[in-house]
Amino acid sequence: MITLKGVSKVYPDGTVGLKNIHLRIEPGEFASMVGKSGSGKTTLAKLLIAEEHPSHGVIEVGGWDITRIRQRDVPLLRRQIGVIFQDFKLLSSRTVFENIAFALQVAGAPPAHIRTVVPQLLEIVNLKEKAHKYPVQLSGGEAQRVVIARALVHRPKVIVADEPTGNLDAINTEEIMDILRRINKFGTTILLITHNREIVNRLGKRVIVLEDGEVVSDVKHGKYRL
Image (cartoon, rainbow, N blue to C red; front, side, top):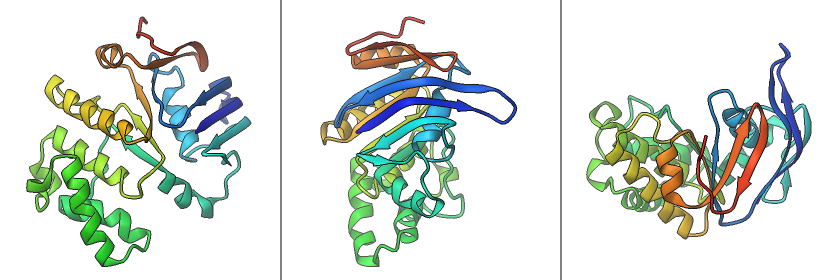
């Protein structure tokens, strides 16, 4: 589902983000990518959604070579990859329903489809009763659940979650992880990028460790031991 072949990223100032990464994440897999700040985790996430381009190597998502993806094709890529970031990036002037619907409207979805899909997504993230609330009226955990619902609007094959629980307390963190586990059970590939040791160790899934831009460990049922 996700394949990186000899991928490196060097920024214009000479900073090395990634060094010769070889990695494959299978369809339906739930993998955690961990590492200290500056290890290259966020750089890799940005490469997968074409926010950045690699200096060397090849990146494939769902069999599609996105290494030198054209700007006009980026929206299509991002319909296949749902993205969840730590900073919610919700539209403050729109309700929960409208924030989720907006992602469909931009893609040209018909109103009837939007009226059908958005309630289904609100059901998945347990927010039906918050549909007409604004972001300022939500807790951090609720706002992150809106972000997850928005990431699911196009039924993506892959979810890239970059520190999705970074600003949340233990209870909200567990709620978010429970939703991600359920999404994974539907067959969606999940790449969780985090520094949270407890989350990774409770999952008991594959653990990929980055250090100074390199993969230093890749264990199928691992623990975060840094």
